[in-house]
Amino acid sequence: MLVGISPLLSPELLSVLYRMGHGDEIVLADAHFPGESVNARVIRADGLTIDRLLDAILPLFVLDQYVEHPLIMMAAVPGDQLDADVEKRYRAVIDRCWPGTPEIERIERFQFYERSRGAFAVVMTGETAKYGNIILKKGVTPVTPI
Image (cartoon, rainbow, N blue to C red):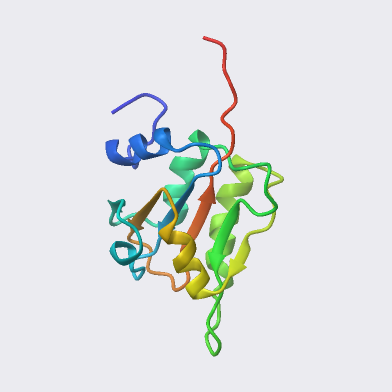
């Protein structure tokens, strides 16, 4: 374990977050998501909800300030309904870590899958909420003096 790093972050996930560059995307996927079908780099975070994982990642991860929507979620398919509490849980963490972050963009299911194919990695979580997936676009990490 490391001081200041959440124990929810595995060494593999920390490595991926560190290796991502500006503009790279990472998918935090719910337990229903076809992660292995859409991306070759899949990390397991079973048992963790996405809001808890966001709470561990976002203090270490700058969201892209140069795009309109650095956060993307899947829109409901016709006939389905979104559970508003899911986005509220995520927004509570996002707004605490990065106040002023733009609204979460919603995109169609198959567009989300296609976007996930090009993501740096997919993190499979234990999130059971339907449409609980979220894509984070990494921004430029500020330089800190040594």
